[in-house]
Amino acid sequence: MRNLSEIVKAWPVVDGWSVAPEGIDFCEAGTRIKVGDGCNLGDRCSLGDGCSLGDRCSLGNWCSLGDRCSLGDRCSLGNWCSLGDGCSLGDWCSLGNWCSLGDGCSLGDGCRESVDLGFADGYRKCVAEVNGVAYIGAGCRWFTLDEALAHWGNHDKDRTMTLCLLESAQAIARIKGWKFDK
Image 1 (tube, rainbow, N blue to C red):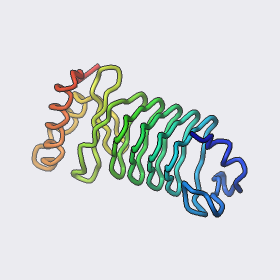
Image 2: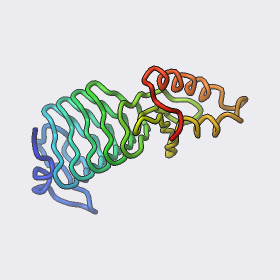
Image 3: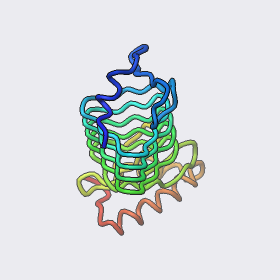
Image 4: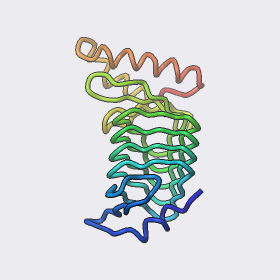
């Protein structure tokens, strides 16, 4: 485990971004990243351009972050996690080993055990658990499963694929024993 916060202190800063020099093993030369205090990076990780990591983030071995990923404070990614371009994780999010989230996934503060439901009707959708409650992340929205069902429930003609993904979310929540609302 390497202290990423210390590594980037020696990099040039342009417009608030730390810019990777030649010879860095976890990103290409010219890659721009922002790194909070106390961030740690496992072996064989890769970071895309425009990534932002909050304070005390920890990435396990073989993690891969696509371009423009944003991790809130104290996010923890297990070994072999993969986040697609534009993924956003709120504070205190925790992803287990082998977790993979596609492009544009958004998970709010404190989520655990996230599952990528897929892309439908213009947005990537994920289900995750926060304090025993199932939450849905879709685009910039983050709400309980009940709130998501109410939000999309009256769109039965123009959101059929989203409703299919929500059926999967309900099944996952039942299997995991997560509540649908607070």
